Length: 123
Image (cartoon, rainbow, N blue to C red; front, side):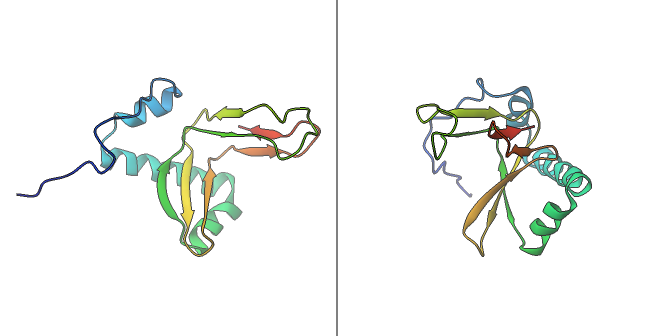
């Protein structure tokens, strides 16, 4: 008999404060999650072929889904050094790990970054 241990402890993090797609995802079984990730990757291939090629070329490892990102600015050009920006993604966003480079990547089909006067993620 194989006993499965929860290596992270018995306390679970709630998805209650996340977007609707993430709340639904938490209830999915492994097979359904993998199918959802494959569908997102297909949409990325159509919307961002260069990003798809990067994922394939460097054999990025799918870690999972990312409901949001939070960060603070590197400089004060927006008078916002004391602000934490939180972007809740409105659609399934994949999180990958690049073993060769030692960095993570998050992506969805519509994610963009505004380099203009007002910096930030657009989705």
